[in-house]
Length: 83
Image 1 (cartoon, helix red, strand yellow):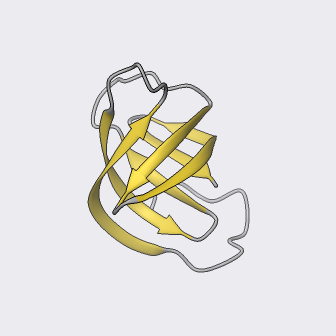
Image 2: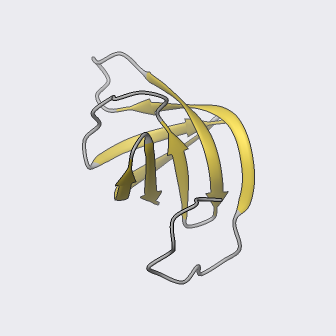
């Protein structure tokens, strides 16, 4: 879980994970590899591992599942998204 205080209540419980995921910003752009830190049915937290800029909307690919995401918050290398 994030070390930062939440400003919203979870709709459903999240599960801690530490698996590789991919961010697809554009079909013609290179895929961004990230680490999936926290995952729930309504959103996720990903760690970009560096200073990578991503748009406010993108697709997250994890275990053959593709989710359309919207950035909810950014803190350092971590990004919280909602599906």
